Length: 179
Length: 276
Image 1 (cartoon, chains in turn red, cyan):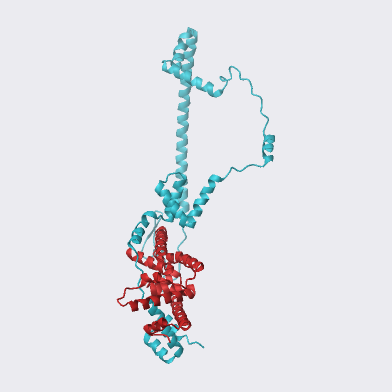
Image 2: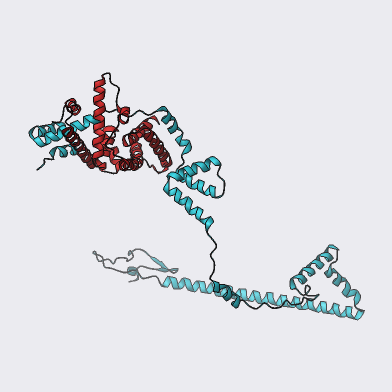
């Protein structure tokens, strides 16, 4: 229960970015899992099956949320549960900013790319598990993941060029990456 | 033209050394590699959001609240019979609220109660009334109509016979006793003669039949033996004669040795050389 509960909550949270919504969605996902247990035939990993169920419920919420208000604005509260506590307040602020930029960029790229990046880089699922959950071959999963990362990086760069702010500059320095 | 070699390496899962070597020589792929690293570093530094204990407790109650679709089917059948408890009905309703398939199944059953019996067209009643035979006036039943019923008569006869037997009355015994005592001396003599004559006739017929049977049995036995003998002879005759072929040394194949005698049908036959 603990393993799958944490995983389901994590998936739900990354889709909703709101604690109350994620908890409600997690319960809904768990109910769906138990109600559909007689349909699980064991042909692929249980976690992939759970993610597939969760994804279907999450996508509805995700789309609704995207329609209701702009997903581009990510609050501090939304990213706080994902931040590990750091002794240095400046480092914590930087990390918070990075996380907000990441989720803003994810909201701007196509859904089919964003969800694969979330499942792989945030939820830590294996390529095979993602492939089973999304009914995609491994090659397609990898290809989409590559494009998703490239798109996220491009969005971050565009933001940086628009804002040209000190925070993003320091972010680039911290990441040791893009020009 | 964009170089997609790095993506190809990534999808194919090629060793990092090979990809790195290509990135060093390709500016486009170098930029793409840095973008990949940036996106990965942004995501990988994040922790999984911690779930609360209240959520954990709530999730632990899910197995007690949730029912599967197959259970919902069984409970739907029971609910139609009114056999569900309140908590079961609540769980079934809760399941239906989330499961479109089970909700549709429940609706299909609920429709049954709302259906009316199909109404025939207005002209059907008139047509039926017209085709129905006119009802005959009820015949007045006579006082003895019940006794004329064959079933009733048979039942009464059986009942009467049963009563007589229970009372010890034997009709056969009555007839045997009644006949001699009721007849005169002359009649008795006639009866005795008739009985003697009948016994003699039966005895003569029996003797004649036995004789005829003995004759037929003898004839059948004789004919049977003759037929059997005939059949054996026919079988013996029908065997094919051995084919004779000339052997290399001049002797006939299948011919008997010269110094042996042959017994055929009980008769001794000397070899051909001795006869010559």
